[in-house]
Amino acid sequence: MNLLSYETSQSMLDLLKVNGLKKERVPLSSSLGRVLASDIVAKHNDPQFPTASMDGYAIKYADQDLDFITILGDNPAGKDEKRVVQSGECIKTFTGSKMPEGANTLIQIENVSVNEGKISIDERVELGWSIRPIGEGYKAGNVLIKKGTKIGFAEIGVMAGLNCVMVEVALRPRVAVISTGSEILDLGEESDNPAQIRSSNNYTIAALFESAGAEVVQLGTVGDDKESIMDTFNIALASCDILISTGGVSVGDYDFVKDIVPRLGAEVIFKGVAIKPGRHIMVAQKDNSFVLALPGFAYSSTVTAILYGLPLVSKMLGRTKAYTTVEAKLTQDFKKRSKNTEFTACNIEIVDGQYEVNFHGKKVGSSAILTNLLNSSALMVTGEEDGNLEAGTYVNIILLENF
Image (cartoon, rainbow, N blue to C red; front, side):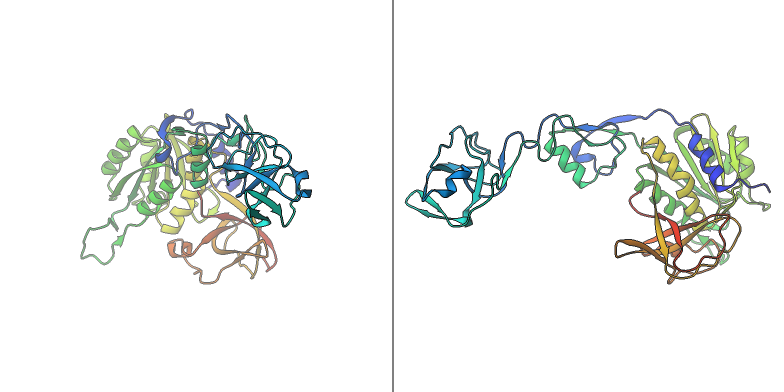
């Protein structure tokens, strides 16, 4: 079997064309976790006028040399203060209040003594103290949040400050997920056959793609029956952007998926990549929909879904990358198990500002061990040209969070 290199398969994946970005408008309160479909641009300065950053007295800086300064009154937050501060005068001004004209410094309450409507300075402050200048936060015309950003709590707050009642977001790609194989049982199904195993792939992958911003259609499981698989695939491709199946792509007598996909009228983009795990992966396209046929083992299907499924979803959402790759230092020796590009579950820590990798608690075995991805794990990438690596070597790591 001729296998593509991992790098070639990723280049081919990157070249695949998807439909133009589909958009919809949703209320700001419903936009958490969605992906912005257009830049958020500031329409005004923040603040729009000099603003007090704490409670104190608005004064002229030079007046700190005077024996006392007369208090003209209060200036609470939200008041459109019109009084002009002259020499020898001050206005008690509160956090968030517009600074009175004529004042160029705010001296905090703790630095003064108050007596019969006047203040005296106990401790001086610098010129401009505790005043937020115009545009300190941002200036009109600044791009504050870029298109393709996944909306979190900070983005919600900034957009609320801009009075964004409705937000333009990318329409969620529809991803259909199905597990194939007569040996698997869906959740809730009972069997007296101890050779059957509980399906987890369709739930793992559904959760993965939901976290990445897709709308997931859960199709459950289907046995090793060609017609049943064909019918299910056809239904999924009629309404979904991506169909992801697990199982049936290897070379066994009951591995039907690899033969069924071309019969659907889909063009096979590639089949077989020199990676571990997941070398039998198939990527195909029918019209504007894609098929990802992944291996059946749990760890293998999850890794290949990350490597080949998430980039397609990311592209459909208008995002620039599907996941984050960082450089990290090995803290223990690593034995490479194949000549292929390997994706090895590892533990990731930040020590003295640097990512470090270890394999404590990670089991070495088949590509079925999904528990290796528990406990803040990551994927260590080793290339075809790599051999065994010594502690202290720097490697690339795919972070498995914030998709």
